[in-house]
Length: 242
Image (tube, rainbow, N blue to C red; front, top):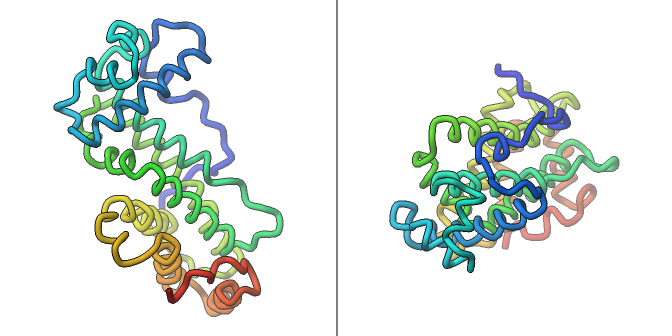
C-alpha cells in the first residue's frame, strides 16, 4: 500500500510560485490580480472552451489590459494552471482540522461534506480540471497531480483514523479515498441529471452510507447507525430518505 504523507506536514513551497513567473514583486498585488484573472478565465474556459479562449478575451473579461495580464502570467497555459491551482487550494482550505469532540466517522463525514460543497460552489472549475489538464505542460500537470494527492491526504488521514479505532476493516486507504473523491466530483460532472433527481445533501449521505457499510467492521456499523440516528452528529441524518 502506498504511504501517504500526513495532512499536517508542511508543503515547502507553493506550486504556482515555483512554476508561474510574475514581473510584479508585490505579493499582495500579485495575488489580487491573479484572482481577478483566474475568475475571468474559469468562466470563459467553461463557456467557450480552453482552445477558443484567447488572452485578449480573458483580459477583457477581467477588465484589465492585455499587456497587464502578461505581467502576471506569461502564457494562456499559465492562466489555466493558476485556475486549477485555485480550485485545489479551495478544496484544502474547506477541509478543517478534526474537532476534539468528533469521532472518526463523524470527522470523515465532515471532511467529505466540506469537500463536496466547495465542488458544488465551483462546479465549472471542477469540470474544467477534468477537461483541460491535458493542455498544461508536463511540469504543470505533475504539480497538479501532486496537489491532488495532498488534498486526498486530508481524507486519507480520517479513513486511517477509522481503521485505527477499529471502525473500518483494514482496507486499502488510497483506493478508498478515491471512492470518496470520485463521489464528490461526480456531483459536478453529472450535475445536469443529479440536480433533477436529488439534493446535494441526500446525494452525499447516500454515497457515504454505501461507503461506510462496505468498509465498516461490526463495531463500525454500530457506531455509524448511532451517527445516522442522531445520537452522534444529529444533523447527518436530516436529509436521508427524502
